Length: 111
Image 1 (cartoon, rainbow, N blue to C red):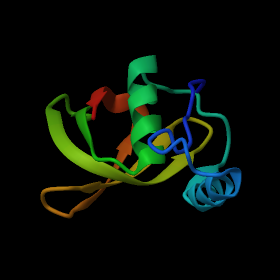
Image 2 (tube, helix red, strand yellow):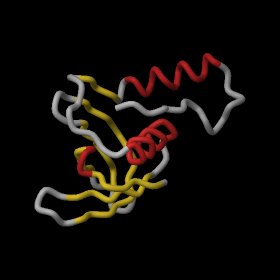
Image 3 (cartoon, rainbow, N blue to C red):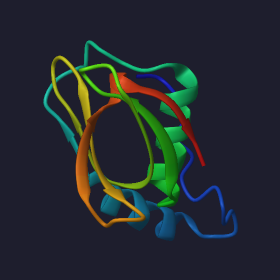
């Protein structure tokens, strides 16, 4: 998964120490178990990365395994990468429900 992940893009005046502390906090929320084989489009990966780093809500279009489409506004709680896929632990901003989505099933993601 190669994309640019901006740190503190919204507040460029923050010092290096503040950015490092922010990154250390975010590293607690990502888990690498292997390099994922399945991925999503570059635009989806970019939107996910931006939303995760900025802690901003995101609108995702998720294709369920049976084929139906789910559209939700979510925040990203945790990212887990394992050998076959990337899993996103999300919180639905309207219902507060926690969900786990597979990154490669996300067809579209926008702020």
